[in-house]
Image 1 (cartoon, one colour):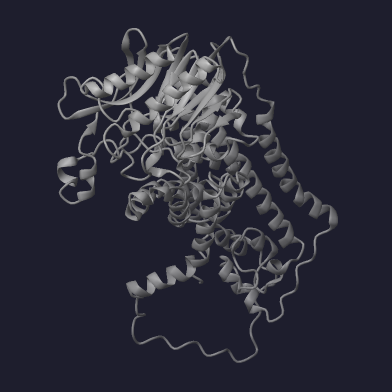
Image 2: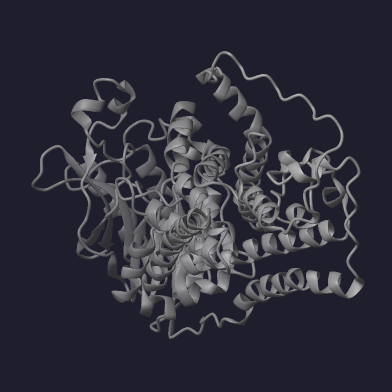
Length: 623
């Protein structure tokens, strides 16, 4: 048997051969029987470990290469490339590559898909080091191992595209939470912030967008499977290969070589066929039968189209209850990269100077008077409560513009020595600093070091994070002048629950204070900006992104980017944004769709295992 014959297609073919009635009774042979092979005097030599590995590599090489190429295709669906239709093709390809495989083979295919995907997606981490890119990519790719295994298992169940889509949601559910609070970068929803699937976010958030993309993709894969079967039944190369029946070819793995021997496609039922020197060709099916065989493909394509267009029917609420004039100050940094801070107070002075110029333009009538001003994360690189110079410079800028300013600053923890807080502080021109929000989800290994005492002994680079950030314990809803804004800091925009809790706590518009100076011109700022687009639609809120080096932007509640800055420039955005009180269906039902879809995906795997075991038990009982 060929090493690749352990697929379900092979099992199907062998089952057909075993269950088929014998076409002719056995006849006594008049010719001299062929001499039987002499029994070996020595027991068969078991293959060495190296031989088994080499055989496995030969068997899986093509599938692995296709999986890796599909993973790269998915990477190109994300910014800065933004080729979102590739997400459909990539997910469909993974469904085809895992279809009919064992769980172990599917697990490897999933890993081969995930690793190049994350390396391409996260290559902006090379400013830290390529070891960081590979290390994080490997960690994230491990989540595709159970995904691939689950896709392989559930591909044997009726309605397998539905279970596959639920498994994608389950995979993202796990990555959103594990380990150290999760890292949800690379979700299918974030590749589809400008596609027909995007409005689904207003109903079920990012998980429902992922589900829609995955379901449409796997339905396309189901159409390919159905068309392949029609091709085989019509007498294509796979159907006419000696030793391969049309039904076996129709169920063979899609990457099997049609010109290869029958056992290469996974068929074990070729012995009877091989006994006949000239097997009779299978009768070609009639036209009506071929049309009936093509119906599943037509149905799958129609369903995929319906799922794709369903998002366009979802209403996206945008009506404003009120409006507010804002200004976003992008002060710029001294230099990009790990050492973007430069000398002390350099970044702070950049934002002070830009705000002073804005105040002059307002007095001269060149710019409208804002009701509030937004500074980005880390706009003050020194604790204004500790350093008088920093306090005085911020106070000067705020009084010059005459309206409250939301200031991003790093502040020493008031009671826990050695810890720092990443805050957004409402600074009033009359009363000074007031309400503040502390980032709830510090970035592991970027803003704090897990197991610092142990890891710092072997990874000297961790010394670049001298102090751990302390997490906040409440949402970022604050009254900033006339507007009740919801503050979300940097990577928190990627986490569903943080943004959702902020809106449900009363935020009428969202602010994302971020600092992407370390990863400038790498594609990372674009990847984060599209998350703001998705959150705008998901929650029906205007989203304002403020970054010291860009990209700063103003996003309307319908996801339209109305204004944006260039990277590494000093700039000011002035805009009038809507304030909304109504919440979306996604806000009302919260994480329920995600949990339900993820549970269905996991239960479908359990069902596939039970069905497989029952089938083996029935086979043993018939023997």
